[in-house]
Image (cartoon, rainbow over all chains, first blue to last red; front, top):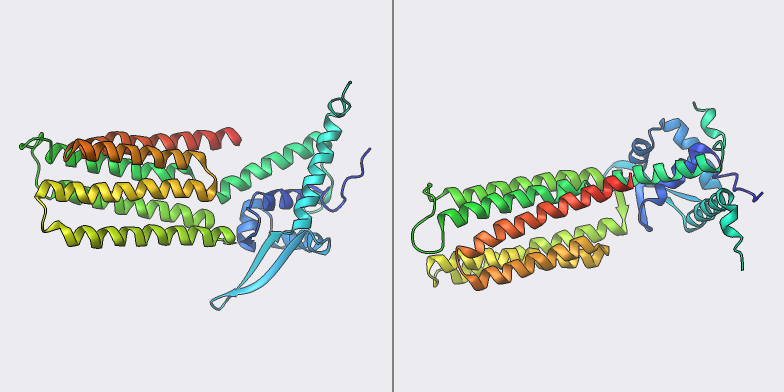
Length: 103
Length: 212
């Protein structure tokens, strides 16, 4: 069996990464909006984001909009690649017969 | 729940289902509903230009009697309302997203604003020296023409074929209507232009539902 990326191979983080992958590259989403899209608690989302950030899959930028602090989140190039590889691995697990082509 | 969601998905099928569902949900949240983008404008054109056709009809007598202020007022009220609905839907979907696409959207918005400013200045400048029926045609043909071209440009910016094709359609309708003359222009823009926008909204919405 193929090794599945342990960072992404957890339901919550898979959902986070899948959602972020729906954004165009070079775009970032605010923390509350991502939380709303995922329906997670702030604490729970923070924990998973930290794990993804440590792996280099997610970039968390803290900035200011006027005087209000804003946290922006985006998938890194590495994160996007890891997600694509994970999805590929899952697909090949599901359809092993298709992968082996008959000559 | 908080401990459960750290577990891996049950099996590959569940993982794939989770990926597909989550991506579809997120895409729906980050993209505004096509109905909110097309239907208010389609209705505004259908009703607003429809009244123009009925009052400023081809020939000399109105097809339907109504107060003379009604067609233009209705058109402006409906266009303003459409702008508000689109703005709310846009902010709802894109307001919390920043980056390249936000800049793209802002610049595109500026193109609309400056484009219409150009038209207003130009048409305002030459209107005095035109007969009344041609004044109406000048304003609406310029405005509808710019709308068609900006839809085409939008299709090119976001690589969206339906948006581009709608722009081509609006442009064609506008050119044909302008050749046909005052009165007829309002009719084709109302029915074919407004109808095209309503159809674009419907098709976009069906496509989006198909992805869910």
